[in-house]
View 1: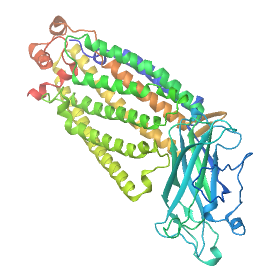
View 2 (view 1 turned 90 degrees about the vertical axis):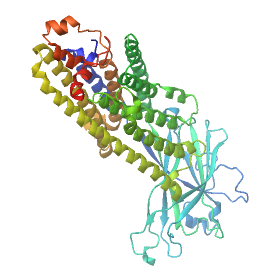
View 3 (view 1 turned 90 degrees about the horizontal axis):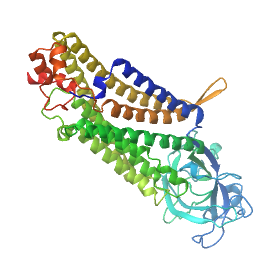
View 4 (view 1 turned 180 degrees about the horizontal axis):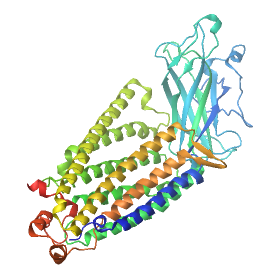
Length: 541
């Protein structure tokens, strides 16, 4: 009978394969830790208060905070009072990037958060549930002498969440509130060299627009973008891994199609997992260097969602296909209870992502968290997805427990076998348990490295060597799951080794009762794997 490679591979060869994969895993971590810079960079911007005294503010005019065509500026709000400058005439201007610098397509995305400096005044306090409304205009250009081209123009509402820790007395006037940072803008590509933000805070007492929001002194922004050096390392990894996974996937499916039987469910799922991994690996991001593809962040989320949904489905089916109960095996319909929560959770997260990043394709200032309805809707999607994830892991833990219990029960029949066959099946059980433990180790490493990357400063220094922990996390975990999929397709591909009838019944000294126990599920020479046969007897009894 021709089983999987993992069933016919000697322990020595299995250790060699494991050692080679471990070397590549270490290389993946070292590439991110020693070669790549940090994944992202945060840059602080202080807005410049420009004055625009035109009557028709709706007409396009871009106010530059510095440079040869810089705007008429004021240093602070108090300066506007003697000059009779109204609040509607003040424009907070921010140039991206800072002077003498340029943005680059290698930065991949721009994410901005906003911080308002609001002073306490007895006659102008922040009301409960106050909302600030901003008229925001975004423009770009690729030459310092070129005209600005409008990219977006929106009315952006944001709810204020501020506290004042000191007593609200006259002597504490002028002190600042402690306000939460606000989501401001996200762009999925950095196709231009220069960007300009003009922010107005229009005041309309009749419509209660920007009334009861305190005295806003300054607007500060923090811009986050991907480091160009990390992007190049990331692209190089994807370019290297794409053909690697694709070649092993083609080789795996070719060996399956050479069999005289149709593929079983587990083989189909492993192949689908290889396809989803290849889908993530394909380095379409190279095109973002030359094209203004703002949808790349959304596309990346969809690719990751497909892979993780496929990975979770594989774990369930992998356990189920090694259970004793054969009645519902080899049919995806038999796993609807376990796979159903994966589908529902993935769909909820997809809808949430479309409501956030999908809308940002046309309005980069949009955030689903800025309104009460949007927040409740987002939380509903996340809670449903979380419940589905919990149900999934309960199913998975139960099935893993059953598989280990069943295989342990089968070990009681091993002493009745001949020595050679007993050693063979003991090796099969060991390899199955080993693969299960490797799966748990990969999942645990993902969680551990994620926690470490969040609680550390981003890099470690050992002597003269600086290790970028966050970059090592991204490249190492990405490489780990590629190696995991690679190992699955290699070890679970059909083996060319056969155990003939003479060897099974003669050389190994197996009597007819034992042979019936071990081969009852064989229907032809390329039938189920030997692990399946080993777990059949108790189900029959």
